[in-house]
Length: 500
Image (cartoon, one colour):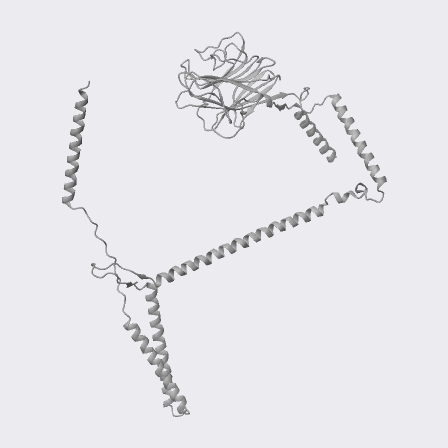
């Protein structure tokens, strides 16, 4: 019972997903209605499927509709018509200028006829279709610019420049699109008689960081139209650059032109071709078997060898994991060897530096300038003093041991109960004691007579200062030169005034 219920739930979910996917709109890219850099311009200076005019300049990466010069107009129009009832256009552009205010702005067009150079953002007035204006100059002094607005026209309306078309718009939003760190994007979507405008403010590099600017229902546009972009400058000037225009047509899943919906005639044609190729392949296999009866046919053998079993897959995973572990351990060993080598080199360098400093002979400057070129041995170090003290302590301990040994020998000699040593052994012991005492005495004399090196401080050179007499002479000369220059300059100015 539980299995039946779970199966029913899964079937219901799958049916719902398929129904939702069947209602999604299909997007088709229209390359003849789009352009994008790099390699935007051909060798002859033209743009494929587009034409530009006015003061527009096409480059390899973008199209500069108008440069930052006063009273300039430019435009770019597509050569082919957009024939779909639903479409989406994504425009990427930049508006940059040196001033805090800009002018005049940029416009996107979808019209039944191509526009010409005119007064409405560089294109002609009284158009038939849709216009999206990116207005950067405040003509009505309402402090509501830069402003983005959409406006439709049936060919009878004239754009109101004095009010910036505020009474003629379908809708709009107050957004700043000038001097942004990243390109600004606008996505215009017309689907099911509804116009939607999304805007990307260019503050981030995320392509999907759009926000809704306007949405208008019951918008009726021409069934076919041309796409275009225009711009204009006035007393103020901005660079208006269009980087790309990407156009997609939107089709319903049940529409004839929608992807995945194949006509019945084409479907039958494809099925017939598939059946013919399959029959031809089977006949070729039969002919090969008849001509080569002894040859092994792979299709009759066990098909299990073509598939990987669960045990083989697990063994392969274990083997791959062991290989990875072996590789990591080998890399760790190599890195440890490198670290040990670096440590050994560092220790050897430090020991070389210490040995060099121990035996270094330092040339001190002559004291008072009387003795020159005399070499002074470096002063004794702290660790050397500690070594000398330790050696002295060792010598004292050795002397005590020798004294104790001599006392023990004398005690043994004076004991009457003990067997007296032979003459040879007694003489050898006396010689050893005598040699040890002589060596000890020499070491003590050497330590006492060793001269202690007197540390010599470096002589600080007295800075050579300029004498007061030389300073006064220099100031006097400078004053004379300055007075002479001022007198010469005043005489020249007086002579020049005589000519006026």
